[in-house]
Length: 160
Image (tube, rainbow, N blue to C red; front, top):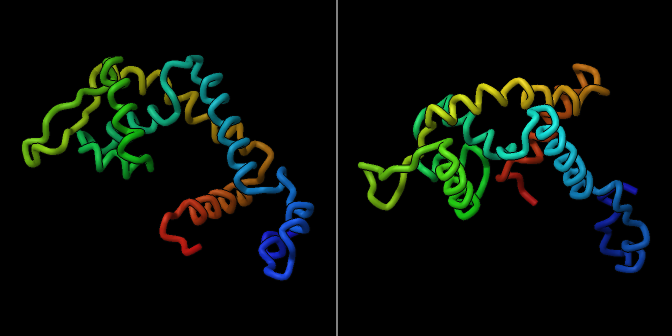
């Protein structure tokens, strides 16, 4: 049963509940793929201290240099409260530094440390392999198409 069929206003709530298949649901499948990707990240990087989200922050800081918390939050698609806690842990672990922003006293700037650079270098080969392992069953064309669709769905300005 397609999604368009599930939102039929003529269908009763009871009928929709009977027709809805959890394992065919986008949210369910996204959570399963996310859990699998997180486990593969741990396995392929041979560690469980740095999370995929933290790896993403390290990668962005390496590629773009020091960023404000707002800029980093936008780059890795997390809300500010989640980022604040993540930055606190990463700073405590010596992966990044957090300092005042000379241009705006209300914001802070985060930057990669030497230890953060070393961690990024250690984790990158395993992290890069995660996508290959996840998508191993797909042809190159199917991989490209899947990633195009995922990016389209992930765009925040997509109308409901």
